Length: 365
Image 1: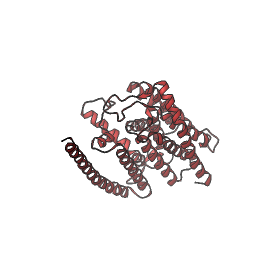
Image 2: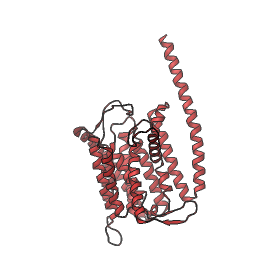
Image 3: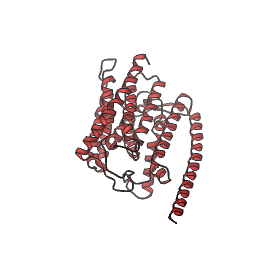
Image 4: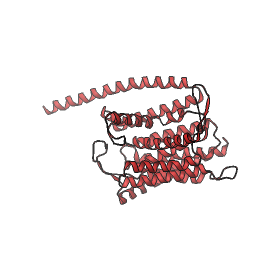
């Protein structure tokens, strides 16, 4: 990477951060004018008063301005960078769909079909995986074109909805997405990616998330809504199957980087199938809900999940620069430590709750 590329990355991050920070209050005003407001109606909601939903527009605006300023729409050979064009068109479709859904919820099947169409646009323009490598043997396997297209569309739509599903606590989706974007940027730098556009997109996405977080961290002033959550998932998915990701992994590295939303979504699907519920049916069984129900505070839960997301991202980077076995050792050791800490903290919080209850009873007597 030359010095100019380094400046492009820094400035794309800063521009996206500033633009998202400046645009988010305007998105809040627009949300109340058009009725994109989240009113707490059930036990799944963690807030007690109506909140604006369109905060994702601020994220999208910051990202878009940065990419338009620093992304390369023309390749060195003089041809159009159709990958970037396809991603921007697809993301625009996802954002518009999210806006309509934030104003008035749309049928799940309709959203799913439109998301497939949005994903097909960049995939057909070259944003897809062409070959994968066995992480244990290093053997490279080429993928048939039909599988490359179908698998890439499945990946983009899946990650898009996975990020949307974890958007249940203040600052959670934005923070996890920023961690994933920084991890993808780090991997691209380690692999000496020659695509300045990929580097700019990862940096811009991280910057836009950081610009939005001051408004969204607990207690949130507004929510990103489907507008923001699906956009974040869409862009992260597109970045994770470009550049070096097209050939050298069997989805192992991007799977770890995006591990938290992916695993939470997989468990949600399994849970709903076992209970005989529709896969798209909302429930209170997500990881962040379980932590809250265990007695953790809102902020503590978000920080714990930030840590888990960061651990998975670091493990992906360790896998990339060393080997799979060392990454597995890192993951196993951290999981054991996490289980111990989780048990210890839970017991402490339960003890504190009992003490407070006892003191309350004494005062009442």
